[in-house]
Length: 115
Image (cartoon, rainbow, N blue to C red; front, top):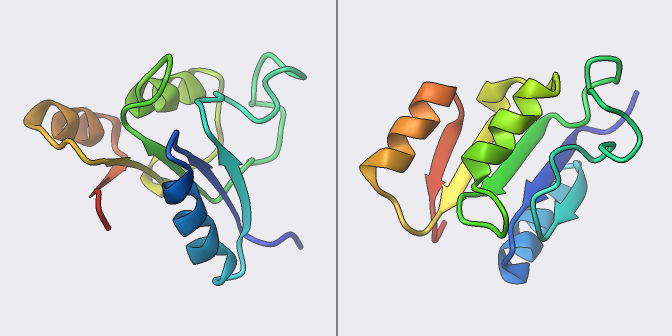
């Protein structure tokens, strides 16, 4: 049986380090990305539907190069990502009603920086 797995997307290296330590201390295998990568396997497959679940928890910064965290999660869903949307979270330092509504509509969690 594999260790629980967390995938974290953030363009701030300090945030990646803090979250890596947090999850690693709790027994997670942690994968870090400094920019949005829709799927860790995206260069190998067109869809996630034939793959095992890539992570137990996925966390993404809202403001990242090329796309928002919400757009990232929407693209993952369209590819057939098996990680439950309830186990995905957006983190951001700039909270507003639009971001909260997007998270609620999508069904993911939300956390405000700093945490």
